[in-house]
Length: 262
Image (tube, rainbow, N blue to C red; front, side, top):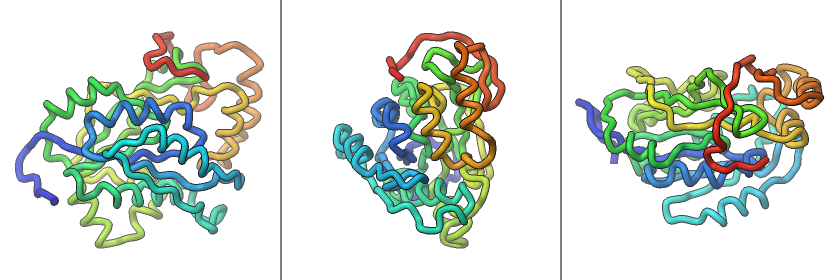
């Protein structure tokens, strides 16, 4: 049941995790980070990578070993129009299908990727105390590169939470908007919106050895934007030098908080 938010009230949410086999090493941590605070979790994935590799077995194994009554899942065929649709289309379509699995279970939906890991205690504490009437909420995260001990001094704001009543209203008015909008999760920044200052998410997208990083850049949505293969090859000709080729962030060395191994 949806509730119109006339005044600030304690937040409750379900979570959609956008997943592919490229993020398999992080998924157990990703699920564990959000499951205590989430009413429900939807894990959504395509059955193939953009290069045509079938990943359905890998996805099923991750889902199976994290079996829980809170978790629903959906593995979709990769759309046939790949290569012609905007790259954002594939991400947004999965997120919409995930949202449909959890829309009636909470007032809000949190959208994250499989390489975004929350500190479960901090997230649950925030949920228990935070009140809002915003339609969208951006949450900060730490960004890591190469190893899970190299953390950027620049925060990112990729985890996004949206009000389900507002989401449903927009989707019913224009079903294509939230899929085809080329700004990906930015399309869900409904107003009024809030930005959270406390950090309890860790983004491990670029924490990979050379082989896995090469596979990532050949199969992710941004693969045509730069010569990523060349950049990865150059990066692994030397030890980590304190910056990255993705954003040019500067880094500090921290503990391996979730004992992630690459």
